[in-house]
Every structure is written in C-alpha cells, then in structure tokens.
Length: 297
Ligand code: SF4
Image (cartoon, rainbow, N blue to C red; front, top):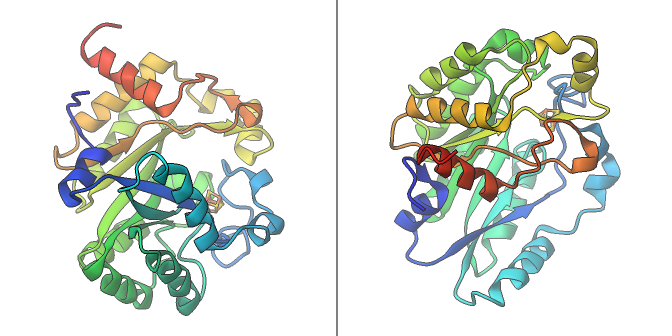
C-alpha cells in the first residue's frame, strides 16, 4: 500500500536487512502517577481495572514472554528477528540497575535485535539515559514518550502530572545521546478543538523525533474521564470515523515528511469502551485512510 507518510515498517526496512517483529512485554513495572511519586489517581482516562498489583506480580519473566512471542512467529518466519517492546505502564520507573537487568534480559535473547521502551517524559533521569546510550551503540533502541497533548491546561485537567516542557526536555536529552525518540499523542482530549489539536502537530514538528503514534480519545468505563464525560458532554467532541480520518490527515500534513507515523488508532476491549464504538482494527483504519486519500469514500 502506498502511503503519503513513512510508516514503521518502512523505517525498520531501512535499518534491518531482515524481517523484524515487535513483541510486547509487561516487565511488571508500575506507574509514578498513581503511587504518589509523581501524582495520585493516575491520568483521568487510564483504565484502573488493569492496574492492580496482581497484574504485575503475576506476569511471566521477560525471557518467558519473549520465548512465547517468538514461538508464535518463528513457526511461519524462521529467519525473523525481534524487538522487545516494553509497553505496559512506565518502563523506566524503577532503580536503574533493576531496569537494566530487564532490558539486558531481553537483549541477551539471541534473536532480539533491539528494544522499544514506552514511558513518561518525567521519568528518565540522566543516569538512566547514559546507560541507554550505551545500549543504543550496539542495538536498535527507541524510547517512546507519552506526551498526549502540548497544552499544559489539558495536561493538568487530565492529571498527567507533567508539563509539555517536561516532554520537550526529555526528548532533547534522549536525542542528544543519539537514541531514537518517539511521541504518543491522544487526539480529541476534552476542551481541545480541531485548531488546538492541529497546533500540537505544529509544535511537535519542531522536535527532533523519529516516530509519532496518534490515538483517538477512548473513554473507558469506570474512569474519571468517563464520569466527566457523563457530567459535561459539552467538553468532549465525539468524532465520527471519517471526521477523525480528516483530522489525522491534516495533522500529518503539518509534520516533516521524515517523521515515521506508526499508527492512528488504538483499540480497547469493546466491553470496557464507552465511546467511540467504531469497531475498526488498526489495519482496517489504515485501509480506510488510504481510500479516503484516493477519494473513494
Ligand atoms: S496512563 Fe500511564 S502514566 Fe497515566 S496513570 Fe495510566 S499507567 Fe500511569
């Protein structure tokens, strides 16, 4: 499929001469925006139900998760290599030596060629970045920051516990060490109209990042934000799919062509989701974006 943007597959193809697959890892880390270290209560959209100590404690080891993930893919693609994606919660929130032990556990697997580490921008001390810089000299390494919005009023309202300036600082310190850096943004947060959302694109366009992940706002039952929505629906814009696609396209048109656009949507389990109920998987959504570009819908 031809995209007017650079996708993650193209990006990896430019780096590796073989097929590479991400394997999601839950390394049992927690979140400083819940335990009082950075904040309490967590982000207002965060799904409380999956945030239990048992969830982390019951997790399998990093090696076991990798083995299981690799077994699934290697049957069909024996030559494939893998990137361990530390995805769940805040994957830089622990003592540096404990973090490094988990990262190296993944890298010690003979078929793992790199890491992607998802985290908050206020959780990357220089000492850790220095250690990660060493990893980036020998392996693929991408750090993904949850930026979510570039508007500090929004960040405060959603109780993110950090500012946009914190995000810019983390990105600059990361990229200064030669580490690939990605950002995650949520489109459609409360009180953010189309113009405000597109201003995020103008701001992140100025940053030295490599990848961008966009997600539609999803309201999960039982969250603080779902409650706010029921009390003040006027603060939220309910996007229809095509309207959201147009927003995404206008968003990426404002970004440098060199940015890798990794995704436009995410899918929470249907039974937890209050809105929107689009029911589209990531690849189905991307196909619809493509059709829209070709003006077929
Ligand atoms: S969304 Fe992430 S940073 Fe926010 S409370 Fe949930 S786990 Fe923590």
